[in-house]
Length: 271
Image (tube, rainbow, N blue to C red; front, side, top):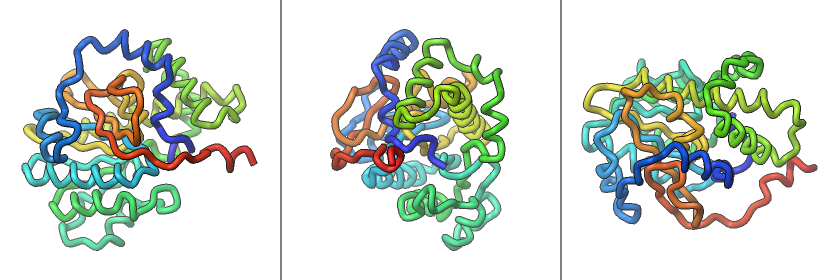
């Protein structure tokens, strides 16, 4: 299920900028932000993985994700499509290219209430139709409680990055989460990032690229999945950003889309 009710762009707090400023020394590469998606993808290659960090409720982001899949398929370079929206261990690798959407959803144990199939189905099915495996990358729900108590996860981030992640957890839960739950929920977020990194490592192929679709916070270089990738795995991280924002802080590139109407994501929780 989604980690937080707020859009992941809220992870980019002022403290995050300080963390990134200390950890990223190379300037972002040109990413042709207004060009065709195929051109943008080409500018990121060659890499073992491309991380696309979305705002979950932005329809334009789902369109860009489908186009990114198509671009890598057209180049014969898509190793796998890894997705936050399905749990680790779920995969379409046993299905044929002509499998139905129902068969694909069953293989991924898709939760349509958490992740609308209409949003993600086009990208998933584009990969399936191309004979490319779609793999679940998220931490299984059954392992969440174990992660909450796993103190070893605290050492997976620097002190500054962990503090920023904790601030994001507070903000992502509308500042309504009891303070005693901040550390355990931060561990879950770290465990999710680590699971997604492991999915990338398992799926990579020489000369090809794994495409990860996740929330923007998971794709952030100083906090998310990149922190858990081995040094021999090359990657580029892209933020899909609705409207204007902070720019490229924490990412190699930003692909902007029109702003969404303002929405109070915390209203239902306050009730």
